[in-house]
Length: 314
Image 1: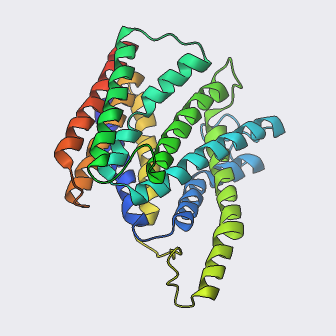
Image 2: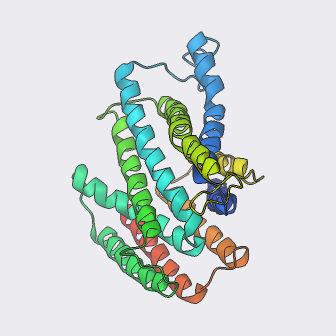
Image 3: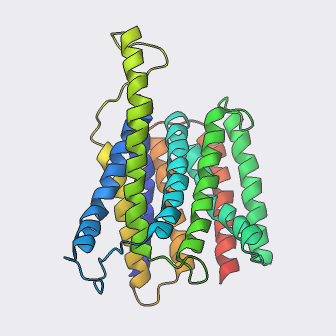
């Protein structure tokens, strides 16, 4: 049964990328991201408020501790790291094909593994090294596929943002290990998840007020019809709230899978990464993206690298 929930989580993660791509087509990135950080916060805000007022007792599984300034400072750092990853990723997925974004994002476990080796002194076995080398080779293949569509991995700003998003996402995973490990900060998981979502929404609100709205006002003043070349207006789409819904549902399915008897976190995590197959199929069928045969070969090597990492962690 836990495998089924892991597969559900993977499918929802794939749809998460699809909803992002659909929502950002011809749309402004900052308002879309603000809406989704607010929606994510709303999932946790009732628990935060009820925990602060004592309505939810400390012994409850829904209780979110208040924490002191030191703990909140650590969570604010995480909020900046994750939000930076999201901003880079949103701009990248708006401009790049899903069939390219998905495989690059799927290499994040490799980046995390290398980071753990460099930061925490973890040692890689032969299979894990094989996975890292295969991921590097797949990245080279992806760059060749990108060139066929005029996308140069060395100079294309959207590719650089995509890579920055993946690296920052890996950094967030490594930072989580420090935050929640007993040998690190030892913070409660719900405390981290609830408060960092709230801080993300606050930061995005500040960016919206002091960056995007003044830019919009300036653009409309110069071009009242809103047709200034570098200005992209915000347009509501029914897919926007589904970005947060898909992400939250994917996380819930993942966490529930881990609570079931016999569940193996390494296998569940690997199954989750198969979400790239969902986004790849939608990129091909719904968004009619090109050069699919070449990208499919690249994707196979990405999946092979993940399988090698999985076998190496057993």
